Length: 165
Image (cartoon, rainbow, N blue to C red; front, side):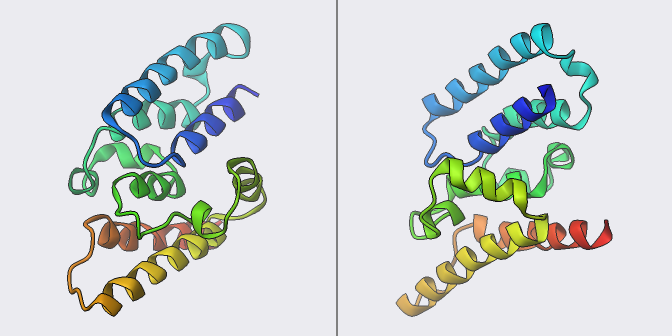
């Protein structure tokens, strides 16, 4: 249960958009405040392994720009799907998130996450990237948001993760 609480927090904090600086500070504060009751009432968070490492990695990641994220060692502790959803924070409005594109409530989206593999999550995200590319090219622009190539770089690892299991 303790792992699930942390995973849900990470998932839902990666779905918000846009995040102002005060929102980022609030999320970081909420992360710190979440660890204490989970650790005291459910299970020692330090012993949770990957969910705890992911929570700890997300805190500094929310303050990084897309250009800083590409080579960050923090990414190894976060699920690729959460990194991709986090990247929507810094994306232009015309790069709609999968949540927006599919007109799902956050709860519906979270339930969908639980029932799907990472490869299906990547397909859904890839569809939003394809829509964005079509919009940019239709305008005649040749430059994309910096998050676009980073998402294309990270995304295929989702499908690889699922196929290697």
